[in-house]
Image 1 (spheres, helix red, strand yellow):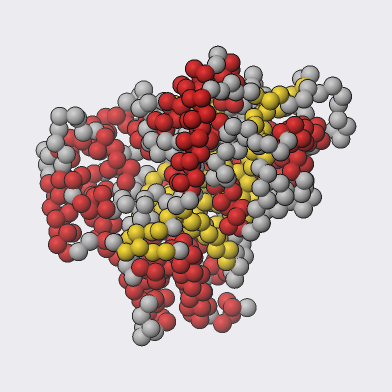
Image 2: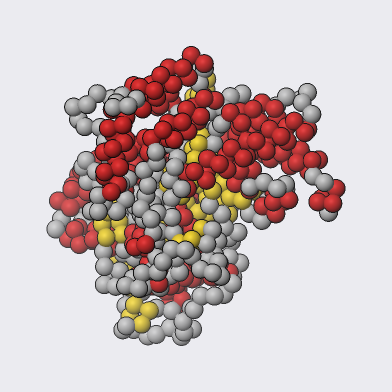
Length: 617
């Protein structure tokens, strides 16, 4: 995020704020409701390159009916505006989005919802207990700043962003429930323990003793005791239950609680913990292995409902896995950047080198199980293995250039990366399809995300021009410039809450149970334009070796990317047997990875050839 300007943000400070972190919070603007005609105009522009003439004319007619004076579209707009003005509602979208996009979503969180960061190696900390201890110390310092509200707010272009979601970062847990899960929030001052998992066994590590936080050396001793105590024989993996379908996990949780009265307290210790540290006994070597291990691991040595899980492997490699429901990746990216950068630059206070005598040993949490619990766990393991076995994940670590060269091309690095993805996809499939890029709306109170629709008339013209060997370089460059300009304009609208998708989502939610759906919402183009064949997003840290998630549709890709100073990185995930348009693609993730590399090379060569001679120096 960009730092605040020297003149300071335009947003006024709240003198009654509980601390510096929230000093702008109450004065952030509320999420607006865009003008109906502007959204519908932008919607038509976004679907035009995806549709035939005949289909587009049908969609145009549906839009005309929807926005007709006195029609249902106008009524829905009025209802949504009234909801946004309701003083009891901070953000008109918040509750709907949390329920429909996350808490009410019943597929497993792992693969479908969770995301990961993989860290670069720490050559000073190659022993698992040592690395886990250092990460924990840094994370506890970040927690302290969050719960004491002293953390500096994030900024974008000098203006503060909403910090409300940080309250979900620590001492929080997603609790399975029908028909919609709930967020469990617990006192961060009272609950100072963390949970370590080793060989599927859960341990409580108290991070405070006699009023003083454990030093890094003391935490290292604690983690080593966990590793030693866990031994070589894994326990029944209760954590695998959290990888289940949410309805199934809801039922299994009741089975677990009914098995023995003590299980409730054991489960509460995990749910109330500040965060989880998974001490895996695997040793991933290459980027693909490390990324997959952080994305889902073996499904056993985890508790997938916790929003913050650090993972440390037997060979000292490490990473992070996040549960996504209440908090987006920008917040946890900052947490992980704080941890990694602070350790790398020796900015973390590790406390005394002396280890106090008499520290309580880590306490193993013992679940009491019966045949029903064992059966549920066995089913969860089977379901997890079957699910994970369907997916491929691979990483393109592109080292030829990065942000520094892209800026010499006089173009947005994000727009450049998006055009790499568009061109790579077109190379593979010969067509452009609906693409989601995440744009944050945290400049508004409790804002989360808006969809930036990357595919445009200009992007389609660009990819076709690039694949036409007869066109001169200047024509291709002009097409590239037009495409990046279009992408930038839509992203600018999205971050200002003037995208298409969230507004239409809100209008649809304003329908009453007895009202017929307007043709706009039943038009095939409406569903197709939100079928994200490419689900993309950028979060970047020079300290990360990986970042990603799964596809959001069965015939699509999850493409997470980082734009580093001297490198680009694309994480590509999809089904192993990818069926698109009735055709099965084997090894599709690796195919797209190669196409992305080819696209990046071609764009580099094209734009270098177009640069003035002095700019190449």
